Length: 199
Image (cartoon, rainbow, N blue to C red):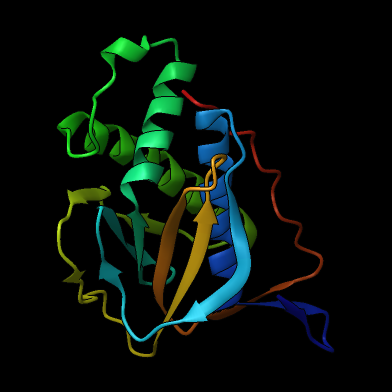
């Protein structure tokens, strides 16, 4: 986000990525009642990939087009899954024992849907534009899968960010998006962000 001489604010791909990262940390921190954080280093990548152990992807269209991929290690997925359900009062004995369980994929898909909802609301509020998305798809993987982007991207840019759970397990977010630049007047104030809930 940069200011121009005519007092307009220009938003770019970096701002979209930061908004997405903030949505991931907000939603997962509330859901797990722990601190989820991301690295300040952003890696430029040539393509987005679904990778083991659990991968999730979501396509966006509307004010801009893009693709979001989140790749969880088994340890990160199980920590988030267990912390979320235990915080909701479920007994530990009722939890799935392995990340390959359908229940783990379903719960992680539910949380990713919450992340996407938070992100689309933030984009509408901060950038004054609307985007729509498909339902997040979760896949348990035992080998690397290259995911090609089919989102009508004319000038694609791809970035990767590392995330850490409360127990320092790692997962990765990848964003592929058309080179983005939008502007708004400094007199137009962003709407207040509602506080996310774990429900």
